Length: 123
Image (cartoon, rainbow, N blue to C red; front, side, top):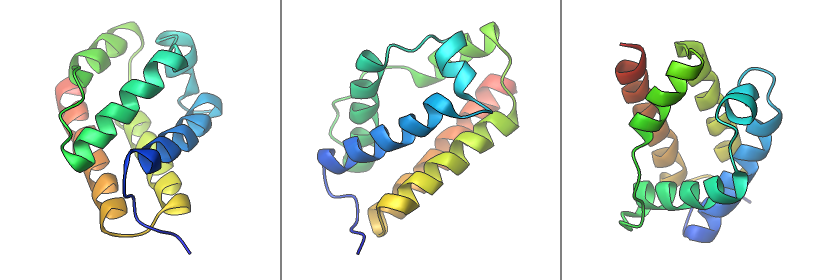
């Protein structure tokens, strides 16, 4: 039986599983692997902090994801479909691993963040 997202350990499990999919995804992996050339050892702990802060208000994330995505968009154009695909993979990963109030909240937060990024990045 699946449990809800309860702590940082659960966030790490989710983020790791999600980015394992992203790294090999036919539609958007190139943004991470080829355009941004993500250093996963640096990126994943930032994502743990980001999502832990989003879900549990820990205040342990410093960064500007909007600016990062705007810079990425200048290097290689992103479109709504890219963001929607990211969200579909994220939702799928959450649903595979967790069920509950926090699981639903993190999916909704991801959609809201995506919508803001689409608006700011794509206009």
